[in-house]
Amino acid sequence: MPTQLPPNLTPQQEKVYIIQLQIEDISRRLKSGDLGIPKNPEDRSPSPEPIYSSDGKRLNTREYRTRKKLEDDRHALVQQLIDINPEYKPPSDYKPPQNRITDKVFIPQENHPDINFVGLLIGPRGNTLKALEKETGAKVIIRGKGSVKEGKVGRRDGLPMPGEDEPLHAFITAPTAECVDKAVKKINEIIRQGIEIPESQNDLRRAQLRELALLNGTLREHEGLMKLRAMAEAQSIATNKIQCGICGGAGHLSTDCKALLGGQAYLDQLNANPSERAKMDSEYTALMAELGVGPGSQGLPPDMVVFCSEAFIKSTIQLREHNHIKVIHLSYKYSLSYLYC
Image 1 (cartoon, rainbow, N blue to C red):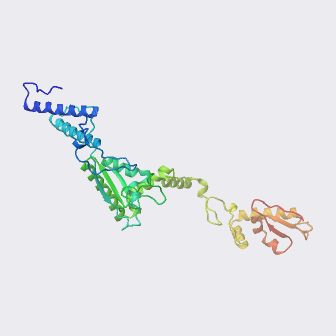
Image 2 (image 1 turned 30 degrees about the horizontal axis):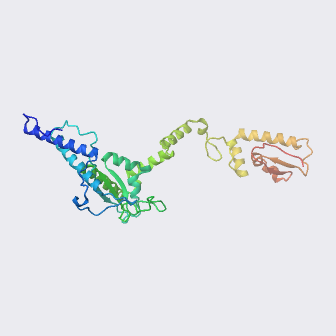
Image 3 (image 1 turned 180 degrees about the vertical axis):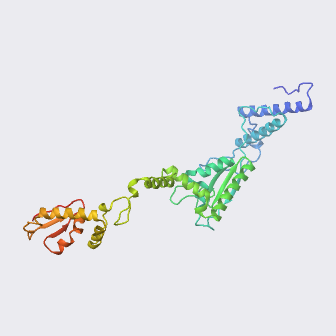
C-alpha cells in the first residue's frame, strides 16, 4: 500500500488515513503470520516466567505474546478511528477483546446456617439466577465452601474448583461496571431479605415454591376456589336440607338413620309420631301372625330363632322381654327376615 499521503488533505483526514494504514498493516501481519519475531534467539528480548495449562502446555509463548500485542495495538487504533468516524467498519477478522470486570459478594452462610442462601439465589432449576443474569447482563457463579453438595464430583481433571478454598460467595463477571453494580445490588437485596424476612413471608421464596410446584405438576392454582364452589353446590342440593330427627344430621330421613338408639328412646320417638307408630304396629302384627302369634295362633315354637334388622330389634322390646323367641341382629341390609332352626 502506498505510504505517500494524497495531496489536499486536512489534518484530520491525514490522521484518519495514517490510522487506516496502520490497521491494514497489522491485519496483514496477523493473517500472514509475519509477526516480526527475530529468527536469531540472541536478538530476542528476554522471555518472562513460563505459564503452563493443566495439560502441561505453555501458554505465554513468544508467538502468543507477539500476536496478543499486535491485536491490542489494532484494537486501540480501531477504537481511535471509530471515535473520529463513527461509520468506520473494522476489518472482517477483527474481534474486540473481551475485557471482563469481576466482583465478589460474600454470602454469610456461617453466620446464618439455617438460611438456604444458595437456594434463594439459584431458585428452582436455576430460573432465579437466570432471570438475575438476564436483568443485569452479568454472569453470576456461586463459588466457595458449601457451593457444591457433598458427594458430587468436581472437575474431571481432579483439580480443585475455582474459589473452592474461599468462603461461600457469588462471583460476578460483566463487560461493564454498571452491569456488575446491578448484579451486586440484586444479590445483596436477596441476602438481606433472606436474613430479615421469615421464610413464610418472603415473597421471593413463596414465588420459588409456587414455580417449583408448577414445574413438578403439583400446583393447585384454584384449589381454595374449588372448595368454595363445592360447598355452595352442596347447599343447593335438596337432600342436604333434610335433617334427621335421630342424629340431627343432614342428607337422610329418620327412617334411614344408622345411628344407634336405646330401646326406650326409640319407643319415645314412635309415641311422638302416631303415624310412624301405627305403621310399625302394623308391621309387627303382620310378622307375629306370620310366625304364628296372635288371635287363634298356637304360640311360638320354643326353639325359634329370628334374624332381623336393627330397626326391628328396637321395635320388639316387649317380645324379647317375654323370652318367647331369641332375636339375633342382622346387618341393616336384611329387612325383617327370619329362619326356623
